[in-house]
Image (cartoon, rainbow, N blue to C red; front, side, top):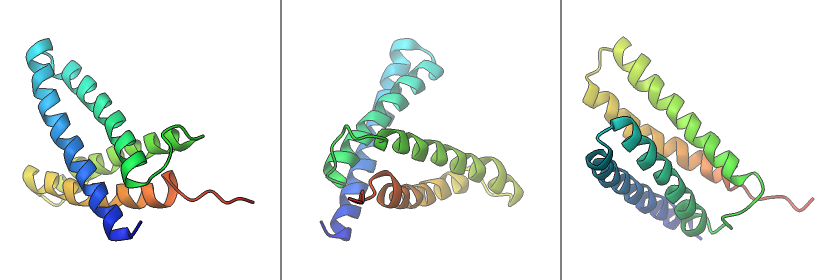
Length: 128
C-alpha cells in the first residue's frame, strides 16, 4: 500500500474514533451521570476500536499478533504523556491559552502516533 493511502486511512480511522468517543462519552454521561465512568467506558472502547481499525484497515495486519497490542497500548501511554506535557507543562510555561494547547495536542499527537505505529507497533518482522 502506498504511504499516502496509509496516511489517509490512518486519518479516517482517527477521525472516526474521535467522533465515536465524543458521541459515546456524551451518551454514557446521560446514562451514568458520572464523567469518570463515562470517560472510562468511552475511552476504553475507543482504544479497542482504534486498534482494530488501524490494525486491519490501515496497516493490514492480523488483530492477534504477539506483542502488537502491548506495543499499541504503549503508544497510547506515550500519547498520554505527550499530551499531558503539552497541556500541563509547555502551555503554562509559554502562557498559551487552553484552546491553543489543545490544538497543539490535536496536531502533534497524530504525527507521533503515526510514526510509532509505522515504525514500531506494526513494524515488519524480520524472518531471521
